[in-house]
Image (cartoon, rainbow, N blue to C red):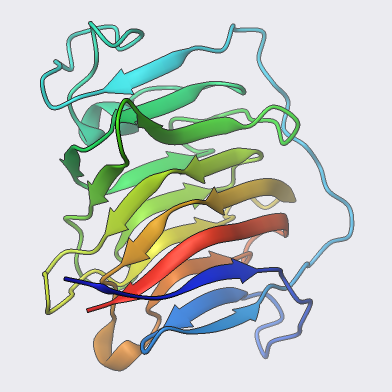
Length: 231
């Protein structure tokens, strides 16, 4: 069984790097927390919310990807379906508590979240009893369980997030927050999550939470009450 090391509550600290762009918020084994969040721009430009009404989408192992996903009686089934769907500001994406979902979640400005709003965030979490588990199936360089790319306003909460490989982890990153959009983004939160079993080659580029604003500034990234475990 994993041993809980400590809760992780991190706030970003402005810094400069040799590249002048890369930012990391890292927790490397043995569960030491490092933070270095560079705010490349003071200005924070919110996304433009669409006129579509926000909805709640449910995912359950007993569901079907042919369902509409908008009720607990007609849930989707897989992470693949979530990655292929489109979401708008204020939507919720909820996985059934106590169940495990295998794959790698992605929320990106270039695919399933073309517009977003820091003032009206999308929520990714659990429903029902207990926390749902996102078990990454990804391996190799910069592999992840959940990736957030160029999105304004997204909350990841109440999930267990695990890397592949069991006691010999092969997934590098738990939650990968990046901005490749070229414009400033803000308002991503990770809270009340248990994140564990991530390791890169000799610890290189391995993190429970990894933040990079290489192509565009990131502002107001909050990591709160996230339990970090080691095996």
